[in-house]
Length: 196
Image (cartoon, rainbow, N blue to C red):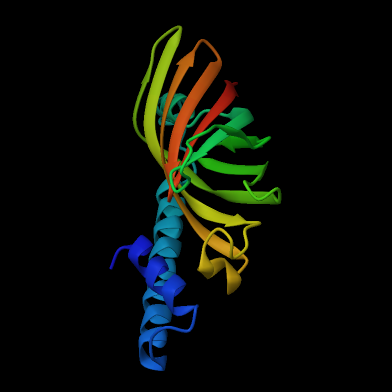
């Protein structure tokens, strides 16, 4: 069962709907989904681990390191504006984001649409990226958690303060300045960044 469908069922059942058996099934599916995400995170960490280099492999490894660093750049995010697709009127709201990505991991803090400070963190991976001298573009995803929402956003937040995050993004860089568009659940975001 897709994660968003599980969240919708858990959201509906948190309002008192469903039997105890249905609620426990949703909890089991949610825990299995979170366990799968944890395994994926652990697997990606293991995949990045390397044996100590030998003297012969140092030039090849330094070239590989430069290639990985180019695909997973360090980036400072300094602003984010969002549009909620559930609202009748589509408007950009400033969320006062400050965030950082480094070697495939991200962390950020922002003001959510309800005026509360939220914190998020996890992994960020590009699926496709192009990096030319003055121009770059990427398409990728983020998986992690977000804290700082309550039941006004979704009913699941009434039960737990830590919510899962799955986000797709597309970005364009001109020299070191980046513009990124991302999609999460019912929110489209636009963010500005500086690439180091």
